[in-house]
Image 1 (cartoon, helix red, strand yellow):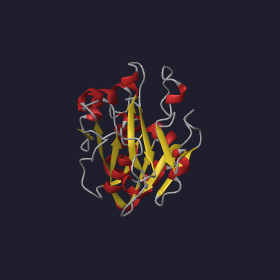
Image 2 (cartoon, helix red, strand yellow):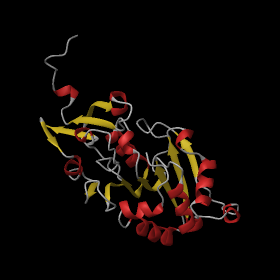
Image 3 (cartoon, rainbow, N blue to C red):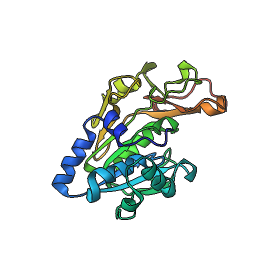
Image 4 (cartoon, rainbow, N blue to C red):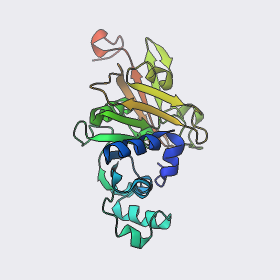
Length: 252
């Protein structure tokens, strides 16, 4: 997971996202934003620099090894976002917590105006479960833009046929995730470059009462268990319900 991506990458990956945030701040005065997989918190500090106290930033990592508050402050100074003197005066310093994002997120329902995730989804066992959790914690007028983990992280040592981090099967036929996502009400896939370069690439959610992808997680494969130098997790889904069939070959 690239841990030091800044707000410039948010602008590159998520289109007009920061413009929408700026308009919302102008209207509401303050918004709450989640950086899902925040790494060293460089992007979060960029938000604070750009929008001042108009933003309340919160981020999460899997563990402190991925980034903590001390590293966030250090990086903010090293990258010239703030001087040490300026940093000492920041009253809305972003908060970092630790959790496993493949499980239920530790946030109340309807608690964020905006959510973004640049480079962590490819590590999650249940990517659809994560998207559904994002919808749960989004406010009704909220927007989430999530980098879709489809060749977006370049791993030269991982075989090409393992660089797709999703498999979605509908009635026995594979459907590409960006096509499937665009079928779902409240979901939009923008994937202009298939992971090459800095053109917009995201799955967008707009806060709704419920988003149902109609998918069941069959299995997840952690590439690192196949070979120590490979990275990422492939999540395999089907539209076939467990209740609608009995496996023919399963030995009990």
